[in-house]
Every structure is written in structure tokens, then in C-alpha cells.
Image (tube, rainbow over all chains, first blue to last red; front, side, top):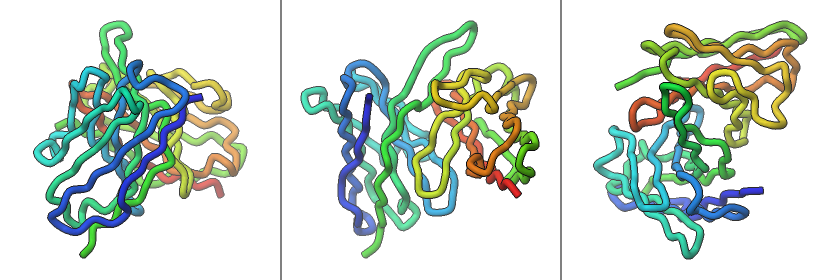
Length: 124
Length: 106
């Protein structure tokens, strides 16, 4: 079955760039959308964005100016870069597989398989 | 921007029915999704497309969505159902999450 594993530094200095990767196993990254979601300790979920195999992206408007996602089909990985980080970016970061479709009159998107998450702390 | 509102907490006695609501402008015109998250774990989808249960999710979980409110119903709630629950919708090109509801099984 499909599995996702986040990787990257657990500590990032303020004003620097947070970089994470998600390795997908058991499924081709060419077949679905892929998302990043984060969750500060004790708080709710925040969607960061999604990417498709073509490289097409959609980002959360509140983070759009600082976010870049990319996909590497040769490694079956996708990545997240978040620039100019502050303490407010400290969170558990999840990668997830996204299902996008249309049913009836409505299109939809949700995340059906999630990684275990990786904690990123922004601190000097 | 689109917003989804959930009650911060819901309490239920074991064996009783728990209902968790999610409110948003004309939410019934979108599909609602529900995730369960237990402490230290990743979220798990328990309801998708308003009413559908993924394989492996117990039948006691059900969902509905009409008007401005989607509802997650857990019938015969068990202690293992104690968790945080998040609703989610797709608004144009953005995922929107509700703030989450902590379900306590007393």
C-alpha cells in the first residue's frame, strides 16, 4: 500500500528557508495530486498547498508568497520550500496524497493517505 | 476567504450518539470531508464526499451535509473514538479546514 515519508531538517533558523521532502512508496507520484499540511503544537490543521505531476501547483493564499513546491518523478518525491521562516512556522509538517475529482455539479479535493509527519522548529 | 466553523468540544457517554457539526456558507453546495486525529498520530479520513466511509472505517461513523451545515455522527460511540475531528472542504482552488472538535467520551 502507498506510504509517505517526510524528511528534512528539524531545526531552521529564523529568516532562513525550510526545506522538506516527501518520498512516496507503493504508488507512482505521476498518478495523483500531492499536498503539504502543517499543524502547530496543540492547534488545528493548515493546508499549505498541492502539486500535480505536471508541476502545476495551488497554494494557500496566506502562504503563497513564501511557498514553492516541486516534484521529482525520477525519485518519486515531492518537496516543499518555505522562505523567510519565523517562530510561527514551527509545526508538524505532513505530506499527503490528494484525491481530486468531480461528482455531479461539484469538484472536490481531499487527502486520503498521510505521512507520519515531521516536526520543524524555527529557532536561533 | 471561505471559513468552516466547528464547536471546540463535544462530550458523549459511551454507547450514545455523538454529533459534530461543521458550518460554512452554503457548505451543502460543496462536498464535506471528515478526519479523525488521535494524539501523536496523523489524521485519518473517516468520511469523504459527505456520506461515504473509506474501507476499514466502522459503520458507526456517518455523515450528512445540507444547507450550511455538515454533520459527522458517531453512533454507539466507543472510548476509542475519543479524538480530534476536523471537517474539510474544497473552495475553488484551496483546501479549507475547520478548527477542529475535541470529542471526549466520558
